[in-house]
Image (cartoon, rainbow, N blue to C red; front, side, top):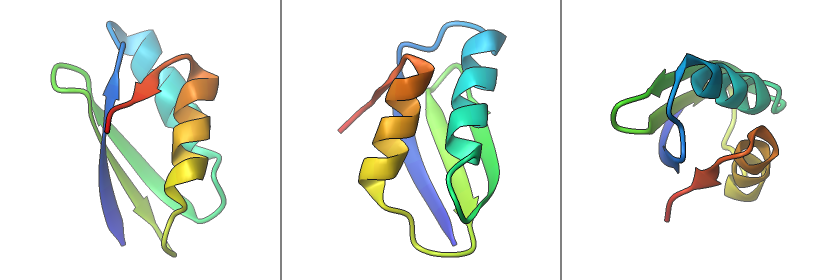
Length: 67
């Protein structure tokens, strides 16, 4: 299952790595792809994700989940 999100506040490759690491640590997540210019984050998981957990992971990395 693939879910798309938009993250604001990322400006560099370190930002991408931080978001990827935090979101990737969520149980069930198998892949995280981040597009820095657009802020698009595509999360692949083996089960439906709780958006609140994704939001918390993004905030833990120091960024904001749009919407």
